[in-house]
Amino acid sequence: MSYGGKVAVVGAGSSGIASCQVLNARGIEFDCFEVGSEVGGNWRYMNDNGMSAAYKSLHINTSRRTMAYAAYPMPEDLPDYPNHFQIAQYFDNYVDHFGFRDRIRFRTEVTHVEPAGDEWSVTWRNLDTGEEGTGAYDSVIVANGHHWNPRWPEPPFEGQDSFSGEQIHVHSYKEPDVMRGKRVMVLGIGNSATDLAVEASRNADRTFLAMRRGAWIVPKYVGSKPTDELAPALLSRLPLAVQRFLLGRTVKKAAGVPTDYGLPEPDHKLAEAHPTVSSDLLPRLGHGDIEVKPNISRFAGGRTVEFVDGTSEELDLIVYCTGYKITFPFFDSDVVDTTDNRVPLYRRVVHPRHAGLYFVGLLQPLGAIMPLAEAQSEWIADLLEGQAKLPSRERMWEVIKREDARMAKRYVASKRHTIQVDFFPYMRAIERERRGGPLGRLRATRERELLGSSGNS
Ligand SMILES: Cc1cc2nc3c(=O)[nH]c(=O)nc-3n(C[C@H](O)[C@H](O)[C@H](O)COP(=O)(O)OP(=O)(O)OC[C@H]3O[C@@H](n4cnc5c(N)ncnc54)[C@H](O)[C@@H]3O)c2cc1C
Ligand SMILES: NC(=O)c1ccc[n+]([C@@H]2O[C@H](COP(=O)([O-])OP(=O)(O)OC[C@H]3O[C@@H](n4cnc5c(N)ncnc54)[C@H](OP(=O)(O)O)[C@@H]3O)[C@@H](O)[C@H]2O)c1
Figure 1 (cartoon, protein in one colour):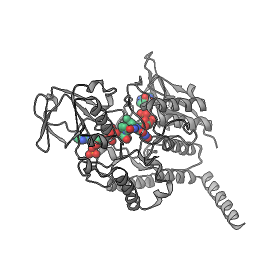
Figure 2 (figure 1 turned 180 degrees about the horizontal axis):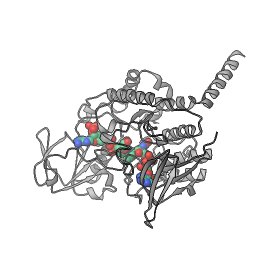
Figure 3 (figure 1 turned 60 degrees about the vertical axis):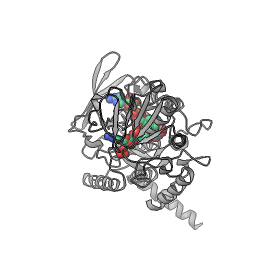
Figure 4 (figure 1 turned 180 degrees about the vertical axis):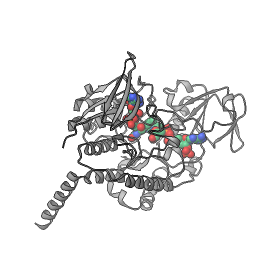
């Protein structure tokens, strides 16, 4: 079955190009719009889209085998955890290998997307010429990323505006020269905070790492194996408590417990927060090169910052590693609302209120985003071609509410945990959706017959 409509893809980061690859392979007509001059989004250091969070020392923290697209493995001669230059090169090679670069309109920002009858009206602006245009599309795939709009502390700390030192968000951080000769404090205990604290500990005069709660620190390696390659798909079928026990035992054996290094005791169990992955932080704490602080209580004037334990420090630079906001500047809020970082989507892809509107890569997996974005794109293409079918709107809302409740029960209450998924169970859910359609059911029946006959022989 072929799709007679035309699709607009917003963004050519790793999620958008996964969608382009699938649409291209299926012969589905599409235009992809990209603000920057190149593909790769977040992974393009100094991207002229002005949206990349990559700093010079950034490496992936999901291993390359976990991160690669199923249709295009990463070269074996890459290290386990490549740097951003190598990752951007991989995305370039992917686009060239599948040959769809000419379908991407670079330096073209989508400025408005709205429903127009059964279609979608998409407006764009060329950033070099200023030329604007509007086109009608049957479907829209949104892949504009969710790590580019910095979240500053909310509400701001008392007296924050009066601080006479410098305050930046990690999104604008590039190189450690801004830290040299300074007393630097990093706020947060996610992956940005640990990377920045480690970087500061090698470049600044003094480094403080402040946090409002503790975290489990997962090492990049256990023995000589990347940690995320230890847990096979099979393990993810075990009850969460059993998975947590096995992972907890492994992590504690490999890296110890956070309190051994002077970090606060986490107020949650492992896998109840997005994992903080670092093999560098704990030794830097052990060396005494990073001093741990609790959260800021207030700015006391000048360069003085007070903490909730009553201590205070004189600081020159504060780097807020306090996360990002999910943002769609091109939607009116009555079309897609993002209050509190929440976007209700069926299987994190389908908007139950709007036919033809899909989201790719808008998830935060325990694992890598790219293969999931690729699987989501295959499912969307199945839906477009009529090879898979969506349940009723009522059923979609039921599933969304159930999933939200399950995640809210499991995860620490935080705006960073509104789009969490577990890699393998999520992948299986998408596979089930793909099997649910008429062709899928036929395929499944045929597979069952084949299995049955091979079992009898
Ligand atoms: C510092 C950092 C490190 C990370 N490390 C990892 C990791 O190791 N592994 C992992 O799986 N994930 C990691 N992530 C998560 C990250 O979100 C993904 O790696 C990946 O970048 C997601 O790709 P994306 O295409 O969804 O978004 P992006 O990479 O942000 O790409 C979005 C693209 O859309 C374009 N765009 C945006 N708005 C518009 C518009 N209006 N019109 C046209 N184009 C538009 C942008 O220019 C950009 O090219 C990391 C995130 C950060 C911030
Ligand atoms: N490849 C890599 O090595 C790498 C490097 C950096 C980032 N990343 C990825 O990039 C994404 C974003 O990571 P991130 O670390 O920038 O953000 P994040 O995961 O959202 O973490 C934000 C941190 O800031 C804290 N925080 C938020 N508001 C606060 C406030 N008002 N006061 C005190 N603390 C506050 C949060 O605490 P709570 O938990 O209490 O909310 C959390 O510790 C993640 O997917 C991450 O894995 C990857």
